[in-house]
Image 1 (cartoon, rainbow, N blue to C red):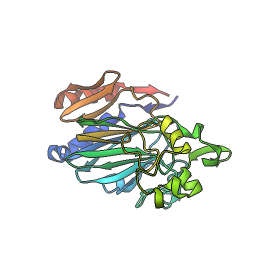
Image 2 (cartoon, rainbow, N blue to C red):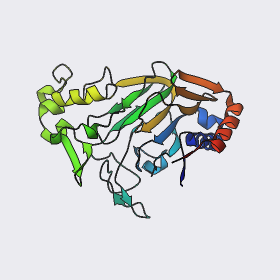
Image 3 (cartoon, one colour):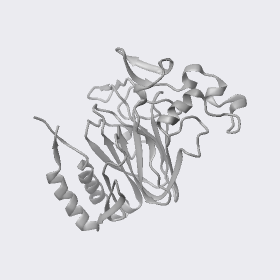
Image 4 (tube, rainbow, N blue to C red):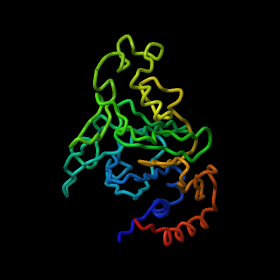
Length: 287
């Protein structure tokens, strides 16, 4: 009988990050909690990845990890699947590969679901399927302002049109974009289609949008796909099956959780740390 650390594993990681960084470092950075709710191991990639374990790491099913990113960081985070790496971090992935290495130095190969961030006085963030889809991914923001949830909960691998499907051993492992497959100006929003007035949703982008209404489905899908938040921390969940599930982050000297009733500040700083430690000793789930 195996045991795994479930959702609240992120608490201890947050505590370690905060206590090891010191109060000034924590307050001057954004906290990123990355959770793998998929049934399989994934290998998140990050670029630029200096603040994220060098740009890549393994994340088993049910695990989570926490990083600090400074204001001014602008980059992307995605998931890789079907990876095999040796002890030196050399290897390859079926989807999202970034140059046959565990620690990504560049963007992942298409198709891949992407989260994109620009951290400033006003943060901008989104989830993009413009380069295709390989994993469901959701971004929750804890901050002030709009701070809407972005992402794609649906598994488009199950409904991917056959002409866009990427298969391995007869199983669909990713869904390519129409631009990637057909390489036309219309699908790629280039040439005479290189502006928002002319480049409009297509049959394929509409299928993506209907399944994932808060994710980019094509290049000029800005109005319903890009979000802003002030002074925010972020929870990125792969394979989040229910947006109302409880997820927590340590933000603004408080442990804050979201659930069916929205965001709630549970307790102050030190009581929050004590509560998190208590939760850590009791929230083991049999799997």
